[in-house]
Every structure is written in C-alpha cells, then in structure tokens.
Amino acid sequence: MTETPPGLAETPDLLYGALEQVRLEGAIFFRSELSESFAFVSSPNDVAGALHPGAERLILFHIVARGTCWVTASNGERYRADEGDVIVIPYGDRHVIAGDEPSDPVPVLSLLDPPPWKELPVLRLGGGGERTDLVCGYLHSDNPLFDPAMQVFPPVFVVRLPSGPAVEWVQASIAYALGSADLDAAGSPTPTRLPELVLVEVLRAHLANAPAADGGWIAALHDPVLAPAIALLHREPERRWTVADIAAGAAVSRSVLDERFREVLGLSPIRYLTEWRMHLAEDLLATTTVGVAAIARRVGYESEEAFSRAFKRAHGSPPSQWRETRGPRELDGR
Image (cartoon, rainbow, N blue to C red; front, side, top):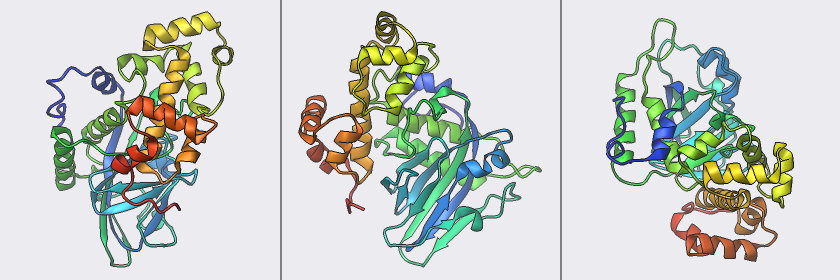
C-alpha cells in the first residue's frame, strides 16, 4: 500500500516526481461520524506539538467519505465539499466544518479526549439527520511548500479528484487505513505512508493548473531570488505589480529577476502573476460561494468585465459559465 498510485508510475510526470521528494510525516488520526445539524470548530495548530513532537503547525486533510459539508476558513470564506472531495488545511489554520442546517460550532477538543490516544478516536456529532462521514489525517513538513509566508495555497481548499485510477486508489487506501490502523505503546498511530501518498496525489491534482507546475516550480520555492518574489506575488495577488516593484521586493535587479523567472519557470514575472491569478480564480469559482465581482478584485482586476475577458481568454468560457459546470452544487451566497 506504499507504492506509487496506479496509473501514475507509467506516466512521466515532473510534478508528481517533485512532490514525491517533499518530505511529509503524519498519520490517519480519527474519523468523524456527523449528522444534520452539526458544526465543529478546529484549531489543529493548538495540538501540533502533541500530535507531532516539535511541530508548530500541521497540514490537515478531511476526506468526505459520505455525504456533504461546508468548511469555513479563518477568513470567513465557505467551501462546499461533496462525497469523494478532499478538504485540505495546509497551514493548520482554525476552521469550521458544518452541515447545511444552521448549528452553533462545538470545539473539536470537547468531542475528543486530548492526545495522545490509546485507540484511534471517532468524533460523533449531530442531531440524527442526514449523515456525513469524514476521514481525517494530519501531516507535518518543513518544506517551503507549506510555509505560510509563501502563500502557495489558500487557508482552505477543496480538491475534486478526477475519476479513474487515482481516485480509486485513494478510496482503497483509506478503506485499508481504517481497517488496519493501530496505535503503538506511546499512543501514536502505527507508521504508515498512506497519508503522505494521499496528500501528494491531492496536491498533484490541485497544482496541475498552477503556472509552471512541475519540478521547476517547486524548485523555485528554494531559489534565493525567486522565493521572495513568489512570496510577494502570492501574498498580494490583487496589487498592481510592476517588474520594478517585484525586483525591489526581492532585492535584485529587474534583469536578474526576469532572467531567473524565465530560466527556472519558463515565464516572465508578469506572465507568472497572470497565470497565478487565474489559478486562484479557478479555486474560488470551483469551491466557494464568493461572487465573480469579488473574485475579480481578489485576483487583481479593477472590474468584473476585465476579469471575465481575461478568464475567457485563458479558459474558453466566462467565469459564470465555467462555474456552472465546475462550481459548488449549491451557491447560497452566505
């Protein structure tokens, strides 16, 4: 169960190969059995040291094994997750998971004994209505990919794996983990690479449309010129950046900045910014209830019309139409 997922080993994939080199440590650590109405609030970093000694923050994921739920990020944005989706909280930020019906959030630690655990816990919450089951796991990594300063990811994102061998492998892996997971004498989950492999596959799907998302892109996060420049663009994608601004922020000349972007990523700095904005827009359109006009402002466009034109050039359809086929199944505007 620790092999590369089927269907991937046979296909050359620079992004997958690069992600495999990212060191991740973690475990499946509990499952949630929820029923409408329900809501719980979780702050994973509050228990980071207990779950992974020495860690200040965690990467958390929830796989929706059954039903649907909403996850609200620390910035107030809400994401819909349906059966088969994977919710990722890459920096361990505070978040709320809830059903469709209103409910006051309950602190997750009030529903579980504090770690370490003698047996893998089950979180049960709800009023007995429609059922939602989650499989939850945590991981830890010192890689810049998971450094909050880099802002490679939003505080919360939802990944919908494409049908085929990859999603079948993830489902089989989770079933295996739940059926065989044990704790050692210290109350820690028996070591397994399943959470690592699941997260690598999820990140591969999420980053597939990121600009220059291959080995070069991940290498750029370690580059002394590109890393600070990328961090600036990721933190403030809405800013009206010029090459001079980016170069000044990275403390290099414009020529050096442009050369490094083209050499490592194959893109100019401004082209990278444009493609990164489109990547962010895809995420927001596909899994949140944020309106198109608000998304336009979030990704650096002064008007919805300008954003719609740019999005249509990149995707072949305007954002509203694109969202109809790929976005949340319910857009209630909350």
